[in-house]
Image (cartoon, rainbow, N blue to C red; front, side, top):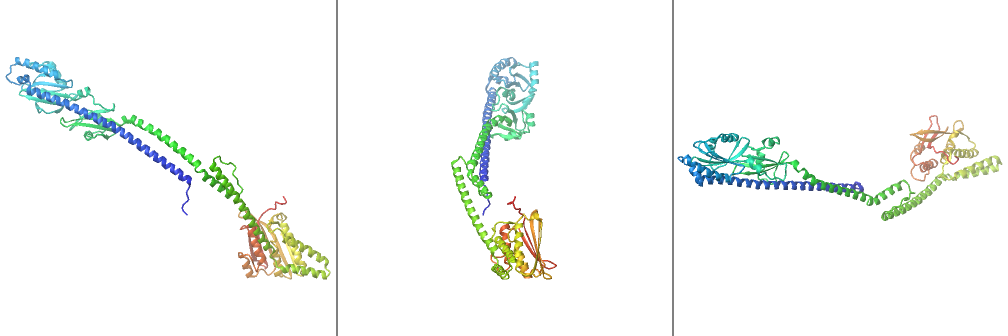
Length: 574
């Protein structure tokens, strides 16, 4: 037989598994939805950044083309590049060149025209200095930028370079024609101020980097433990790179050696996470509540028949006379209750029939044991009465008839009922009279019983067999046979017993008889030790295993029998 299991336990475990599975699916779906939304917004940022970088590259290209065009094809700059060109005529050329530069000049660019031979600036961002005049305004401007004209001669022509002046960062390109030099300084900060980098997250930070350094927001990136390698590593990643609680989106302009990064804090997405999580959480709570309700309903309606059958089965084990006091209003359950009620009724009837049959069998068996007496006892009693009649012993004959009739009445007593000890002692006295009147043997009966014990119940004829055996098989000492009855109350393992001591002063039990009667009885019918074995069987029927008998010989001689039965008071006379 396999291991037992509970339907309720299986149903409960099934609903728990379904709920946990639903929870896992909901969490997985929510996490995937949130991840997809974050990736979508980051991808949108990456696309915006790429477009921004392309626009910046076009501006770089436009500035480079303008610079190259002026150097290569503008006649005014060609005249300024001639070493022996008179200063008086330079003024006109500078004026025309200034008009061209001013028309093209942008707020985030500084365009400077200078003479590399004399290290003198002709023009810078709308400021015009003819000839060798160096007004204080120009020096103040150059001082603010931290620029020396001479240092531009170190830059390679027609190639972008990065440099830092004062608090700003510049990409610089210049071209040269003889002594005339045209230099364009592209200010990254001013460009970003005029054209902010578009981002889906207002809290995003912007950083500019080159191949070997971070140009802007160095302190912020250092505090967030984000390095130049992290910025470079995020270039080309359409979903960004996660680092130290930030998403990094970068674009790099290889031709210009500059990159732009958007740093988005993860906390920026918390409203999005809550926006996605709260509806799913509410749906999860609702579904969980629905599953709990379904479990309760399933437990109520699916398990009621099983529970009803189980409860009634337990009641059947305790009592056979139960009935359904609260019929269910559910048709199916009501039908089960009716069927169980009918089953209980049938079981009760069968049990009553079985009990009646058992009692009849026990009654017949006890009747047999109680009446299994040698027939010659009654024949001897009749012969004794006949002898007394011939000898004219009418008084003795009267006592014999009274004692014999009392004995017969007691023998035919209902053997399933216990009798008060007082009646049993009276039967012993009648039986003693029969034995004494029928013999010339000196036979003395001693009885030591407390009157308070005489109202307790004992099996009928519990003493008679021992009295008869002593009379038949013992001679006594000095021609006098004594039979002693002593009854006391004892407590054994918190159970009260009535203990009956029966002894005589004869020769005692023979060893073979003593061994036989101390053994459990076998079979139903006996050819020897009939009285004692029948008493054992009757006591096992009446008390089951709650009584015991001991047989032994006294050290001074004589047989001794001890019988212990439960102490049961007689309630009939209360």
